[in-house]
Length: 229
Image 1 (cartoon, rainbow, N blue to C red):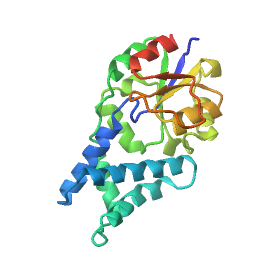
Image 2: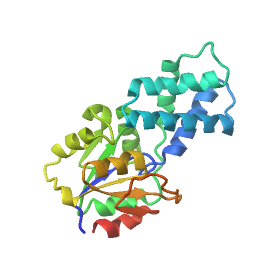
Image 3: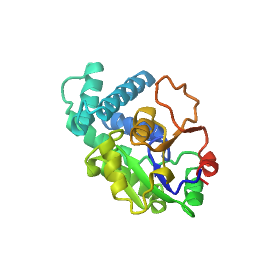
């Protein structure tokens, strides 16, 4: 089946978010003159992921999420004085904005697909950070538009997010639209809830332990070209 409109997630789909996340936390801890162990990073990563999943379910606001992950982290480390969660978020955000390493094959695949397809970004990330990362990765020019949840006014996987996104796509046809992302609970669930086909990008072959079923599953981005052709 041919697809014309391709809706791409950013983090760990087009840009290596886990690398950027670790780099940002290292920068923050270096600034604070604190050691960052693998155990501490793993705790932060798990807590951050859990909070974003709560955000997807509408159980926490993004501003609260962004601060809570740091208050929780430093409380876990036993550091309760001299730490301001909002300030930690701002400094972390500075370092995160510097992380724009593309996922393998991403620039080449985007270049190929942009010749015959309409490409869009759909992300829940922080607007200013995501825009900066796309620009500095030199892939922003491949996209007709970039839809970011805080600007759209709804977040993946909510139907409202996809309703507002597709309302702004002039040539939108449901049968010719597909969502590409690494998150089952955000990208793939959102696509399914809105009646769109989806591609689960799963390069590390993680087991699907949910009831969410993608239309396709790939472990390399270049395999998209066969699917959407």
